[in-house]
Structure formats: C-alpha cells, structure tokens
Length: 473
Image (cartoon, rainbow, N blue to C red):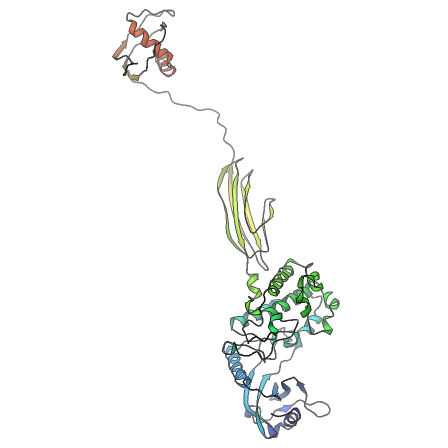
C-alpha cells in the first residue's frame, strides 16, 4: 500500500503518473512552497485538480481499502443514476494513479465552491427568514434522500456546504448507505453531538442512520433563527457542534440547552419532545423520521347531535383531530383537547368553527346550527263535529238517584246501544219537541228518566246534547 509521501510525489507529477484519460492534462493545486494542496484524513488524501476549467476533488487512499473498493463502486453508480442535486459528480476510477510502481484506485468528485454550513449560519445570524429558509431546504433534502433510499451517514456541519445561490450540497461520501450495501460493516459512524448514543456500538450500515442527526441539525437552525444569542452562549463557532453536545443526551431534560430551547416557540418545543422520545429509544434503528411527527393536522370528525333546535335547548358537539399542536373552537370556547365533546346552549343561529394548528399548516371546519325561537301558542281552534240525525251511543248506566231534566226543546232520534248487565237496551228513542218548563219535564216512562239522568251525568254526551238543543233554538 502506498504511503503519504509516495502519493504526494505522484500528484506533483501528474503528467507522468496520472493514468486516467478523462483527466489528461489536469493540474494539481499547489501551495506557495510548491507542494500539492491537500486535505489529509485518517484513510485518504484529497487533492484539488483542475481540468478544462472544471475543478475536481481527487481522493487517494493511503490505507488498504479492502471490501470498500466494491462499496464505493456501488455508491458511485447509484448516485450517478439518481442525479440528485445535493451530491457532486462522484466517479470511482480503477487503476487511475501510479504510485511507487503500483496502480491504485481513486475517487474524483466535482469540487464544490461554497461556505460550510456553520459559516453560513454565522453570516446570517439575526436574519430569521434566511435561517428558517435554510431549515426548510434542509428538511426537503432529508426527505429527498429518504425517498431515494440514501443515507449520508455522517450529517454534520462540516459535511454540508451552502453555495452562493443558497443550495445545499453534501460532501464526504465514505459513510453513505444505499440499498445494495445496507447491512454491511459500517465504515464511518458519524460525529458525536449529531448521533444517537447507540450509533457507536458497532452497528452495520443502515438507511436510518441520518434520522437522529437530521433532527439535531433542524432544531438547532430553527432555535438560532429565533434566538441568535444562543450562538455566543454555547460558543458554537469554536466547537464542532451546533447546539447539542453528546453529553446533553445523557440527561436531556436537565441539560442547559434543553432548558433554553423549552422557552422558545411551540414548534421548537414540539421538536424537543421528539428529541426526548428519540433518546428514550435504545436503538437508533427503531427511530422514525422526525418529519413523520410533523404531518399536517387532520380533522377526523366534527359534528353535532342536532342541526336544528329550539332556542333554549342544548346540543352536543364532538370532534377528533390528529397531528395538531393546538385545537380551538370559536364563540368564546377557546382551546380544547384534540378529541372531545361539549354540551352547549346556543342563544341564536351559530356557525361553530373548529381550528387545528399543525407544525406548519392550519386547517378548519365549520358546523352550522340553526336556532329557532320558542313558539307561543295563542289559540287552538277545533272544528265542531257535525252529527247526523241518528247518533249511535254506547252508554254505561250505573245506578243514580232520580234527577229531573229541564229541557227547553229537543227533536232528534238517538240510537242507544247497551249491553251487559249494567246496561239497558233501547233500540231507538225519539224525542219529540217538548214544552219548556225549566223546572220539571214530565216523562211518561220512568225508564227514559233514568236514561236522561245518565246522559246528563256524562259530560261529553251532555255537551253534545246541549249543542244540539242550542242549534234548534
């Protein structure tokens, strides 16, 4: 395996040792002393080459790659096929450089010009809209990576660039995971302060590796957008962190940063709640993307047991809402639980509005209740029944003392039917016009006396007879 000095010698003499036709004539960037400009890492060395006005980051390993050769080949092909805007051109070249008599493989990536993530934040401290836009674009990028089954594996401020146009670019692809290599031994486990504590227990590569760091970066940017003073309080510029350190995750609720962020907006407090839940989960492979907690609110149900009611009556309204940070009802009801019911007494026709506030969206639903005044009954008119000349009556005749009737005049025929032992039986009784006497009326038949006495004591029949008498007068 070539050593660092051998690699530097080869890069200084590219016209001799570079065996890649696509970069023929490329020149290395040199320091003032004439040595190649280089970023040296624990596994490889990165140089800047210029070919036909295009800059490349040219990576050469100084340790044995082993199985990583196949890994990088697969990553290169996969990223090229996806063509996502967050990645630079990433090409794995075999036998590209001759180093001390040995042909070695290299990786070339488009050289990206821009500022590091943390530098961009510092530049725009106090510009809330700029930083919120950065957080939004970062969230969109994370969703795009998930949709395309890619995890970067080492999301942190040093691996994110912001271009002059404000575009997000990712660098350092050693830790990238794609479906073809998921489950293989993890090459890089990420930077502490951005990773779930369980990430450092030697797990294999996973497409879920970014979930924790996505939340850490997102919540940090939003918090700095709201309270720029946090930048100096936590000396962010002079550390490798944004706001959280790995020691904060040991007892998150008692950490200073947790207490400070708890005083910010409901959005930040909600994200803190997600972080708290994340830390309570033992294995990072069991995490869900934080965006799954931020879905738009949905009103599952909003109804009443009546659509129309009389003034003074009660109605019961019920509701159920999901994914809402706050739910409220108008008409001076105010904030309510995400699910519940309420008995109310509307005084007039009302339009009830249920409003559900989510992390970014607000939805509402209307419920109209018609209220009518209490009716006042001034009069009831019932038509007088019309009787035929012959009226069929079934009359029970209990024993009464003899009472004489005073009848002014009456002329009608009655069919009176009696049965059982308590009834008398008369088929037809015809009453002829009688002379008025107002005291007594002599009836020749004692049996009729009893019948009239019984009729007199029956209020309904008596009223009917009196009406008939009055009509004839």
